[in-house]
Length: 147
Image 1 (cartoon, rainbow, N blue to C red):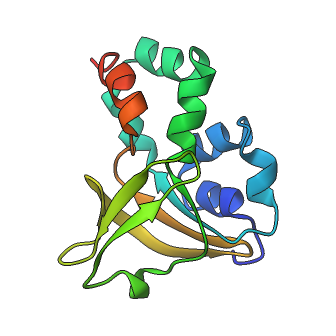
Image 2 (cartoon, rainbow, N blue to C red):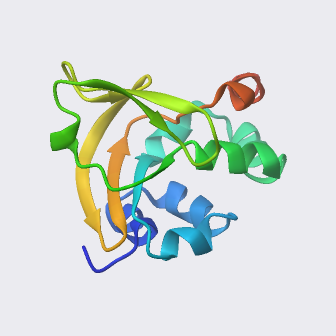
Image 3 (tube, rainbow, N blue to C red):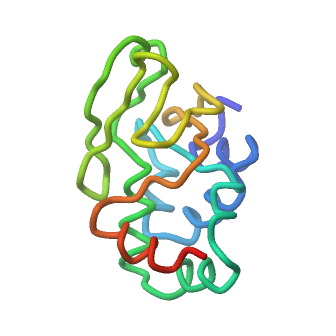
């Protein structure tokens, strides 16, 4: 898969909804470019916390909020998990804000567990996670829509 972009790698690894969202976003062209990027891709089941109506509103309602959430899953540079194990670091994300990457026990990004690490792409690396990462600006809006 290393000849594919980070978006295509995420899609082929089973993170279909997230890859579809990225392809429809303002990040699409950038993520097909040279990079490198580190992408934390939420599993399709991570979106199960939303009702159908809430998910539809999230995906199609507030485009600015959606862009903010998507960008909160993308960082500049290519960081494999070997560089994260045993450390606790702050990662700066494309949409602004930062996440806490904690490799002191099980690898976590904020409250999400890394479930498929080190999916290499030609322009970076994808780490599959089990939850959405929500920046402070978007958390209240998204949480208010969860069932």
